[in-house]
Length: 319
Length: 283
Image 1 (cartoon, helix red, strand yellow):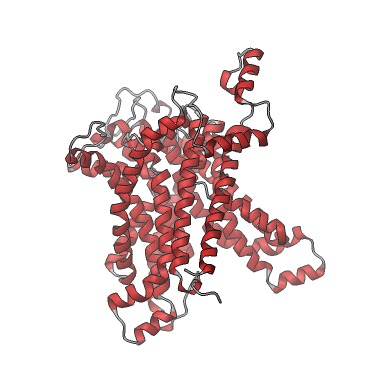
Image 2: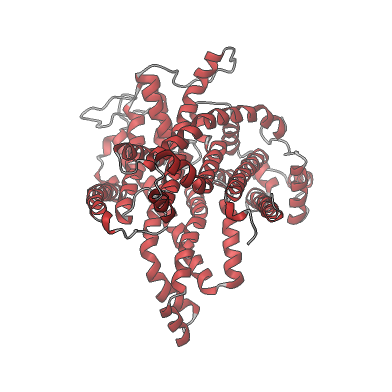
């Protein structure tokens, strides 16, 4: 790896860190500064002035906003997200019990949906205009343009109600066998796969078609290359950047956008925790969840960009 | 992305495609117009006895075309009343987002220099928070009410509108007629309103449609989570949430509002596809 490439990578990582810092400032501003005085808010209007003053003292509201932000950020960096306002546990405890569930769901979905979307997307791009391409395009437009809860609803109707293959709304907490695990995972994973495959497939297809229309592909055709070689050796490497981006976006969707799916299927993941936190206006919990999701999102987008940089031979040599 | 490639050999094919899309596009526009009409005058079309029917989760019948909901209310009436929230709130947010985006973009393009750089950077930061996260954050901080939801959706979709409008505006700004106007001594406001705006309104309308779909989906999801429009008001996402109990039986009370959302978003997508004349650009 050349020094130039290394510098590009370092710059991209730095940019991601800077974004994360800005995001943290924004999260702090929206949750802790804009809504007004947290102590009055928390205690209600009937609170005595002494109680409000005591809580203000305890929450450190007497200090200026930048100081409070610095304190908050300092604790965040050390992994201390504070104490939940609703339950007695610390936010870290709540998160650590839920995060593995969400990650497991995301991992299973990713393992199924990424290969599926790439293969279907490439096939659709290669057979552009065929009945297969049209069917796939119609299907993905339909899925992308309806809310996830509708996809989940239809999935439940088809697979649980009519076909009776799967339980409609179930998450067994005591999973002992592989079969039970598969049954518990089936509906959420199926729904998530539908949505992520549709997103990735559309972008993969578009990126590859862009390349297939480029003049250099015509040149490759004139030289006699056909079929798999044309697509895999010539067009695909140039489409890796956008495809990696599509995958990253879909995976970040898996981290954050599973909100609806986790709620429908009553799956004990982080998103469910966050939705409950929002409903109860448990600010420390919401702050922590948002920061985790945003960090995950930024990391994924950064990885996608790095893929694009590393896959681009033009950047390997300094001009 | 270039809109059309000039390839003489491929000429007949696109034409056929445009015509077929035209029919679908018309269908989309018709459905969209229908829902707008329902949102506008729907409440006056309903008869008064819609509320307080006897049976809970009644199936579709001549008295209740779409059956009744979990409290025995007429589903058709609920959907007609919900159209106002789903279509109205989303449209308001979209117009706000696109309007703000266009204004900022024109300002950035006409100003250039550090103003442009700062605006672009600041709005880019906003996009590094996933849209639903930002919505949840706003609702956690300010509570769920229609003004908060409108503002939230608008804030979330300003950066996207800004980016597209800025790209368009910067191109227009480089045109000779803008240089002529500059040489005449016209001010920044004149350039924005008379030279740039008329030239970016057309493409931005397509973008407005796309963003409308995103806003509808976002707001429906928020309502579905119980964090959107609050009862007794109900948009279609709320209706799905309220009646999710009959999902396992395939009840019409949960399917009808879900289909209403799907018909709205798919109709807008169809209309955009035919207007933009190009498929596969909807994301």
